[in-house]
Structures are given as C-alpha cells and as structure tokens.
Figure 1: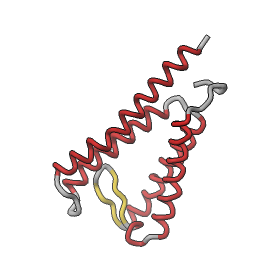
Figure 2 (figure 1 turned 90 degrees about the vertical axis):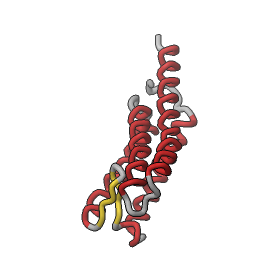
Figure 3 (figure 1 turned 135 degrees about the vertical axis):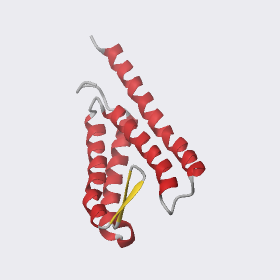
Figure 4 (figure 1 turned 120 degrees about the vertical axis):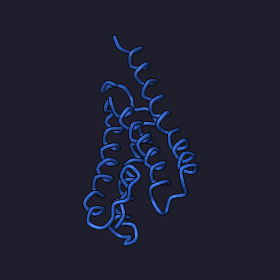
Length: 137
C-alpha cells in the first residue's frame, strides 16, 4: 500500500478493534484480581508473577496491531492472520492441557471457528495487494 492509497473501511475497523482490545486487556489485567493472576500462552496457563510479567506482551500485540492497521503497514494482514491461527491453536491446546478445558473435541471446534478470522485476514491482504498492483504505474 502506498501513502496516497485510502485505508479501506475494514482496516480502520481492525485498527479500532485492536485499540479497544488493548485498552480492555489493560484495564482487565490491572483491575480484576481473578483475571490478572492468569495469562495463557500457546494454550498453557501462566500464574502469579509469570502472568504479571507477560500481560504487557498481550497489550503490546494489540497496540502494535492497531498502529499497523491504522498506518497500513504492508505485512499487517499476514501478521494478524498468523496471530489468529496462533490463538486458534492455543484454544485447542488449552482445552486439553488446562483443568478448566473441555477436552480436545471442543478445542478442535473452537480452533476451527477461530481460524475463520485468520483466513479472512489472509484473503483481505491478498485483495489489497492485487488492488495495489492494478493501480501501480
């Protein structure tokens, strides 16, 4: 994407979603005691100090996503899709590894549903690259 290319509505929506998610996660992690003591990475729960130290990474991921979508960073669509697939895989692992999980069949269903945004992000990125190639001199 070039600087003179208008930002599509869905990139603006993604930027707003990421910014809102960053604010929500910060508030939740700082203000809700039951939640701030647990973080999940690749489906495994971190508790206590490890959760407190890694929570800002989640905030940074969403804040970075907001900035990348807003500024139309070229790789944002692939990076966001990779993160969506990571979240899908994490749900599968968490469903089996956590005592709070519901087992691999539910985890597989969650992973399948949460992969849909990843495919949509990849598709949007391809469409925007094709649009830019058609417009390029």
